Image 1 (cartoon, rainbow, N blue to C red):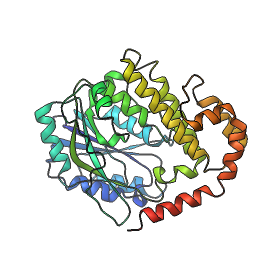
Image 2: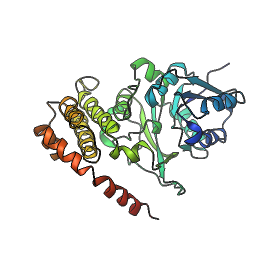
Image 3: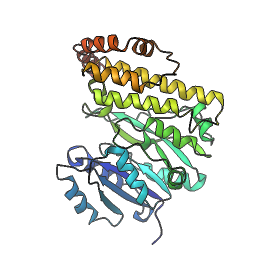
Image 4: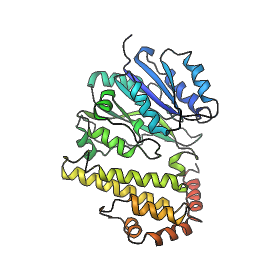
Length: 336
């Protein structure tokens, strides 16, 4: 049997209560022969009956496989497991609570057959529950084939890994696996992925509908110290990429990566103002995670690094009322 063109990898946790049936249905309805793609669902210790349901579905589909984790390793770990067993030339990702636009995978298939890219970057539409949308989130201006470094500088790149269709060999040959047991594991990973590629292109293809629910990580990160610390670690990894993956890159690209790391630090510290935790934990995160030699170009990082304990005390005070302000602001923003 020939290997498929695509391997679609889906990390799963309690998928029955988080949109997985709709996600899979959007795949089965794609106008593609089933020999062109395989679906790999990696169950991360679900507790709601999802694992048994997945095996029932796999029994009905010759191109579907179910992998089981013995311990919870989060999305990054699930994707890694899928990468290691995938048979496809290209890897496609999706989260269980999102779904593919009708005909989108077919459109990507035809484009890749003609262009033979290392990485294709596509687009998405953000949706709120009950409010479907087809509006492209990025619609980048530069659509020619470039090197990975060129596209980072000219377009910038999206942070969600499911906006990238990439060669399986790119992952294996460059050891491009996700950090496991992390919540914000993707921003540095997509930059490493694109940096390693020679032929990259953005196309304004509406590929995935991304559901921004009230319980998603992106919508609740401002209330979670765990997610905030994970985001700070992501900022550290981004900043240190200059020393490792990007060590031989041009100065402009190195500055761009440092600035990105600094911006992630700033956003993390802003979230620290909206969530409560022990002063010891907060101070430890500021002192140990933020890179000591970072430029600290933003006001929040300057203040936090200069006066970590004072910042922690203030953040626990502001955490009593700022989350309510954010919730009210969002209700106003999404009122229609």
